[in-house]
Length: 600
View 1: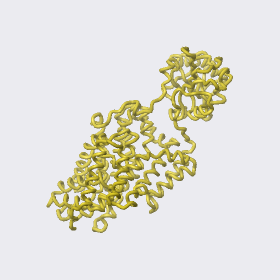
View 2: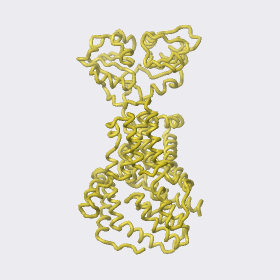
View 3: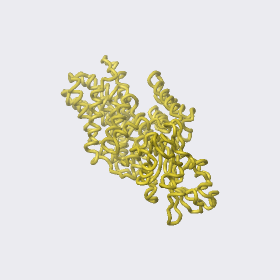
View 4: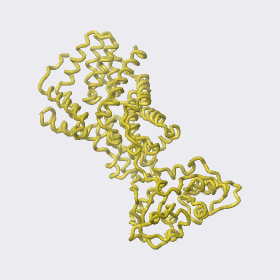
């Protein structure tokens, strides 16, 4: 095949690529604005048509990303993803290394059997929640998880678009097709190497961030109310001699019952009323100072559990928490006692303490008549606080913007997800059509409202990708990609397998940074097959290197996963350069080493 001659269009495209990469690095303007700039300049310079310039907004890849983000949002909204990550939290504790390792492996496994952008989108809300709970800055764990999703796509032939296309591309050359798990040894080695890379070098290559940036700032009641304590779960002994009432524990021990079950969990009161009796064998959750809770437990024959068990889900920070509410001058609660208002019965929240000027009351709260300016500390479900806030009876001292989870809709969310995945696997429809069917299902089954679906999409990610797609088209249509590939591979002469694999891996890495990974594999496979045959190297292995190395996209946020995580992780392009340089080099070394070791 005769290589194309260098022309003016190629030079223009090359200059635009250089300008885009430069602007990505220096960040004089935001990366999504850079992409939009490319989208506008390309048709103005006559390098692509106007239709092609905006084709990225309707491309299969971008629409698929929008759909999978909405599907992931629905699964998170119903706490399905939370159930998946619960074992990760239990096994990892608060250790950054264990959290990072377990999350990365989990995401990589999922990514091996679905598009890696899908796995990344599904786990984004979970990573945010883990960051809040463990107080690990999100920039320290989100990038490793994103890289793991990309690496996981190399484990099977369906994990990434280039590998999916590979068998179709080699068919005209009479090469035997690859089976589903053909790349698995290399993929597993890549996942392992990626996890170790961040475990060993993460402190140097990852942005530091801080606990506040990684976790949403939350109201800490212990700072303003030092005697309020924390949550405990207790069990009343079967042989207990006294059956106290809820009010007794509050008035005598400053301990507030926020949940009660008298039948082993089948019926739960969240919270029980003040006059409710606590019988033998009951399980209760209380908010109170540790020393008083243990004193109360001894007095009433209760056992204090080391952590929440029965009420772990009901009282998780996703569903419930503590807020400080200030009584407004026009509130209908002014002049009424807390007992008269019956917060527990009518509003399903538990008053824990009251601050008036410089005094704090922790006990006998029911007797206190509310005045304007009183601050009432309360525990309850986030949806109850949203409801109370809409009535303008209180002003919250901290934003109560927690999402209202709806676990009762989990079955519908899973059904929509299963429908989308089933269509992907068993039909020939475009990936975007299959995934958008699942996303639409989330809205039609009322798992999400259409406004929630719109808000779930990070439009910076969408425009970043949509703007780079026409740049890739211009690179291919101008002949620049073919020109560079021909000349780079033409310099090899009669290479050894090691040299050929290294050059092919490096060239694939370079191409996937400036054009789509699909475009890179489509372009390189026809060039690499005859080159490998001429050098006496197995062309199937050379093609496999291309298919794998077109996922080696870590240096700049042009890969779909990196673009998705850039905003939530508050990353800059230089962060990807710092972490991605070593990862890209390691990727090529592992791929070539494993190909020579296991396949040659």
